[in-house]
Image (cartoon, rainbow, N blue to C red; front, side):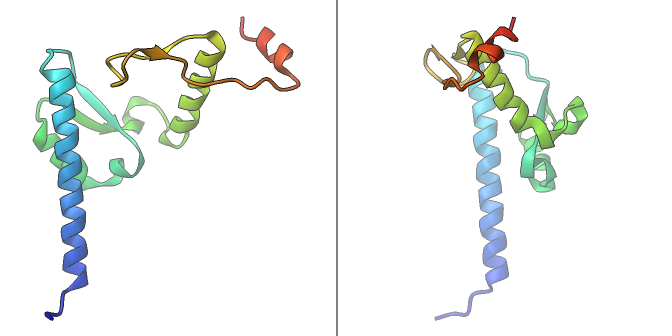
Length: 129
């Protein structure tokens, strides 16, 4: 059996995964946004992908009419984006606001979450108005 250079193999696997990710993202934006002639000017990236220069530059090459920027450029702190999203989903759940529709890829609308009342439920609910 031939001796395989593990570094080259790892690099190939990472490059293949990155290329697959770029193609998946590119096709999704083309199919669901661009083909429908919906506006798409900037995509803000957060998480590890925002720090992956190969990913961001390949995305820019794949969709040259779209700007790919780190989330910080929008004025939001990526360290808190997940917490902010869950806070929004919780607020929407308390308000009875639905989440879903064609822009999320889900058929129909539904509650973004379920609230299990605790001891301070009444106090919390009165603060929502």
